[in-house]
Image 1 (spheres, one colour):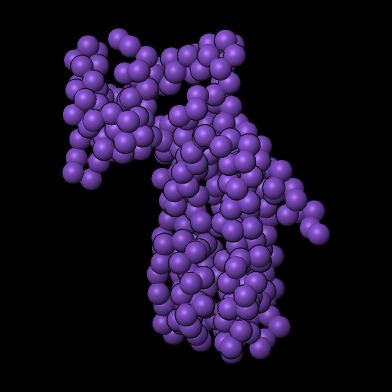
Image 2: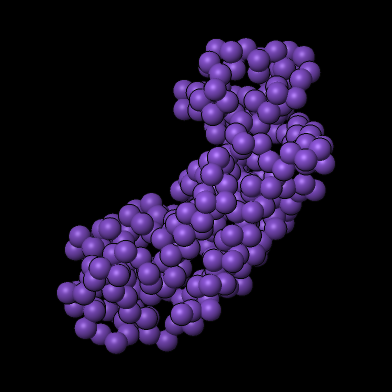
Length: 302
């Protein structure tokens, strides 16, 4: 058994594809596949389930994953002690529910690139459940997720509150709702509503807000960024955390505006999460700290 075999398995699990793992590792896909199969034969366990849609950890692989991660973390500690703070080929993967993408994530990635010019950052949009699963399995290094105030934080993760905001109605400036100081539920029911798909926190919030009533017409979309684009194109209104709208290029250009909801005291939290581990690669640790610093700047204001 060789360390690179375990690194290859970790890469396939993280990327969900033999092809993508081969590209990242700069190997041919047949060579990578054969290396993984050799490890499976040595362990006597099928580590991967291979499907047309990609490769995922099998049940047996998930049982062994903590041990594989433990070995790789021990190797990282050894390399760190020997003076290799991080490998130049390291990729940091961030799963995000696409909230606060521009005012928070983009400046962080830009500044991180300056400090880590050879470290790649991959930002992946996903639902919260998928982000938690990928953090647990090692597919993501960091996760940006929304919580409603009072939600339980999953065990096994380090969680840091980055931003705390309130739900707002996001509309075009020429929308009838933009002429209002605050928007009521009745007002919201009278316009086409662009809702997040089931699985997003804001879907859960809006369902609770409307109390089972249906708007005049509704669309469903995946993530805040597409929702804002649809609003800017005049398809309707959407409900998002204010920190996902304020500072967005569409808001700065005047294509979007927002209004508070009547008598609503709900708070939405943007949380940064990572799997608890004895050793965290330096690049992932530095990116985590960069998110925290940027959040403090946004909270402090001008």
